[in-house]
Image (tube, rainbow, N blue to C red; front, side, top):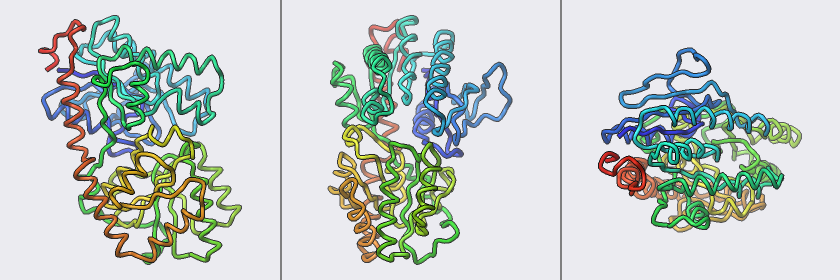
Length: 417
């Protein structure tokens, strides 16, 4: 079958963004299917296309069986709310045109943003196409809980779009237990929902990458790395609070590296400078191969989020699975399913939120017992291989698409398979 795949923030491993969609599309191709990926121009991402845009679009095959349609719609995490909203809507409208004219057998759309579901809705009801919808975050629940969106009319409109996307989809995928529960709460039968979390790219992180550390970090220092978006949701002020506590304790042998970009990066850098934190280093985003080399020289990965209950079970962060794939222990600073995974498998530290003393204590404990830290890393890698292998999860993904009941659509199940 041919899958029309909508992901606004698509990137190949050559970019500094998540590669879930690339890996899922690649697995579809390996199983004999064709994929047409429709995306925008995500800052930090790399689509694989290099030619010029013609009438706001460029198109090409980046590897056999995988075609990419990229709209000239630039987007970055540091963009303002109005600009982001306009970009989301423009992408959705242009995607609808593709969904109504392209030749394909099944349409697949993944958030964020929530507007990614719009072309799927049109494909389902105007062309009778099978529609599978992947939910990476619960909208509008998360932006409402964060206080990012307060306008009742906007929240109502988002709620309607969420409901319409769920009801239009023949099958859905949630990336965390809380997301699956949130979808079911909207009246979708659980038999139509699959839990397929983010996965571990063991082939990338286990390919004996060349270790490296930024300048100013000694080989003997304990290095704790956060590699991801610097946004309000990530709660990185908690990391600076812990760094300040470590500095008060005189622990100059513990360094914290923040890798990435985002709306709060400048304010974080300014705050670190005002506190004279010489144990915190900021670094630009790096691609997966470069990140693998960094993680090979890292002692512990930092998984932080703002202390918002909606995050506890409703997120599936890429960085957590990258740390596991690299065989690195994880320090997590909020309750929820990831904290439970860490505690159950003894592969890191789960500390209370908004507690810089507990955060600093965990890093000091990691420094004082390197033998146990190494064992935690071994358990993290075992967990990556046994439960979160990208190959296993991508197979599950393909089977979910192939074996769906699409009988109400005009395309028969036999054609889908």
